[in-house]
Length: 502
DNA sequence: AAAAAAC
Image: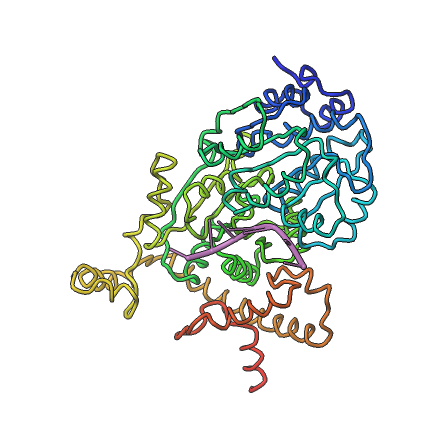
């Protein structure tokens, strides 16, 4: 059997790997490390969770032992699609490079230039970057790329999705032709292959079997849900409370606004919860992720920024508050649980308008996902004046169903469940009242002292960026009329006005 | 119907 000791890595690297508790390399590591050490180009087709990161970090550390960095002339460069992934790769360098004295610089947006500049000035052995910030540094003349020996392009297919390829091309043009290039992608459609052909010279191609598209250790269930957000939130809370073995969970929403709304709602209901999406200031993003990783936060509400690549071991549950629009995102999302052979559970809220996307998902994973508590036909029919009425005109089907479902409603969950329901709503009223006091205080604090740090720590997605805040402000006001109450989301300002009047 | 990434 191949061990790390057989791959040609240096002693320093080997001892760090041993200290981290690893002896046997994963297939991508066994395949990529030897040719990488021989300065070959690599075309690695591997998904996250296959040990891909170490497959370039370890040989790079070994190769970097010869030579020294000069000011403003980095020796190696790694490109990542998101800030969190970049930070994660940096952590890997710290971990496996603990016996080295290398300068690692993390160049990502959303944080100040100062420290990054200092590190560049000192001479960086490894630059780990998101494309925008790297180009920014280049344009400011802080960076000479002529000394780069190794270029890593990670998550190439995702870079393509995100429209980063022109940036990548610009960056690659700045780096000498003689460089070594390590190229990784989860998939290799023709478009990515063409890209690889442009960037690579006679590459060693390593393809590892993609982990069976959805791990067998993940129990997947669908939850039939009404379409309104507050109804979905109520159902989600129910499902969360139902779980007896929930250690921690990521809750995915399709939109950033919904991440923010759901986060506030869960917080109000007393859950230990954090939020993560791309419009939050970087400090909150970092804090949230760290808090979740070391179990200070149980639930993390997130956009698809967290769907791929993030290494959070041991997530017990994934909840999809929304059915993802692209089927492959479903696979990535639920791949956050059931890792390393552990068991996991994935619940997806499905509304009537999601069936199209659900079909696509089931087709992609080539199996039907079981319903947890009855499928969509078990939902109570929408109340009078709902949009379905308009659509159902002339068909007669809706008209037939509504009275029946209505008649059934009082007896629906006639026994204990009914009692629980009223307890639940009473709880909510109390929670909302208590919260209104808290909200008021918070609002007071804010207007009185405008405490900057507080805002930073606030998980509220509002940014440092004033324009962004203003946009959010108007966006919130544009939400449209909500004729019958606010559900469980009474805006703080309403409560303040109400109290002032009283 | 989205999200991500520079200021």
